[in-house]
Image (cartoon, rainbow, N blue to C red; front, side, top):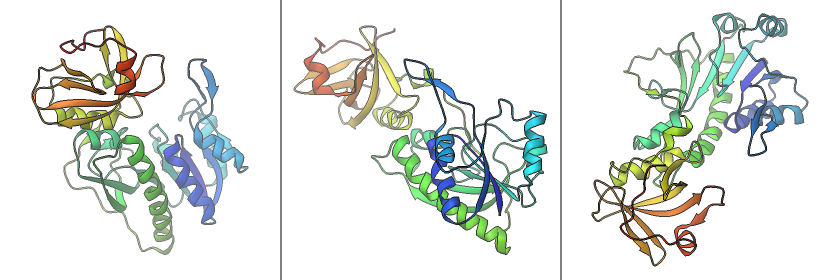
Amino acid sequence: MRIVFFGTPQFAVPSLNKLLQSGEKVIAVVTQPDKKKGRGRILSPPPVKEFALNRGIRVLQPTSIKDPEFINELSTMKPEIIVVVAYGKILSAQILKLPSFGCINVHASLLPKYRGAAPIQWAIINAEKKTGITTMLMDEGLDTGGILLQEETEIAADDNAETLSKRLAEIGASLLIKTIKGIKDGSIKPIPQVETPSYATPLKKEDGRVNWLKTATEIFNFVRGMYPWPGAYCYLNRERIKIIKVKAIEGSGIPNRIEKAGEGELIVGTVKGLISIIELQPEGKKSMSAAAFLQGRHVKEGAFFDEP
């Protein structure tokens, strides 16, 4: 089949790779424009663009998905299927109507749960025991199209958004190939979403602020869901500290207060239980263990994580 692939982050790369390995004809890749990253603000291409160019695939990077020139160019390609994996923008009705077999989306949740931009992060934050991948025949709504296939995976206690994303990306790639095969032979038909939906709202950098007025278990899940982006953080003596890995432990303390700062342990109080900070990253520094952090600073027990 003649396929145009829409995708942007690393999550989409395994799906594009599987399409190529399966012998499908990917005639073009559409991805977001390059963005400035890092301290040097260097213009960097999306992972999907790098992967596509290395394999000689034509790449389009429209600044607007509604650009008439872009839509006309897409139309002249005569795609049979458009595949969308974490592209980052909602396709217009005009684009949805272009391919003869429709537009297929690989979404990282068990729809209709967690429609939207950050399903992996919110599934962990909300202490879900399982999640998965849904392939869907797209319509004009936000992840509202008919379900084609679904596959579940458990969320392990040591998963964070990064590890779960990698696993789901591979599941999604395999499920995409099964979906296209089913569309070709007519064995798969879209099933309407009938259950009550939930939504995974987009995350912003400031959403990573740790709320110590939650339970230790809730903070544990929050830190896992926020890694690696936008990252959980707090402030200590007005220094911004990124919290990378924590453990919820039994005990009682005062929310926000450092209950222990010695013997390699940095333990903070919550409304129920304690949080042991295992790995953290001071502003402008590399990530380090709590023990290494305590060696370089005079952190006193009884001190509070304060306002910036």
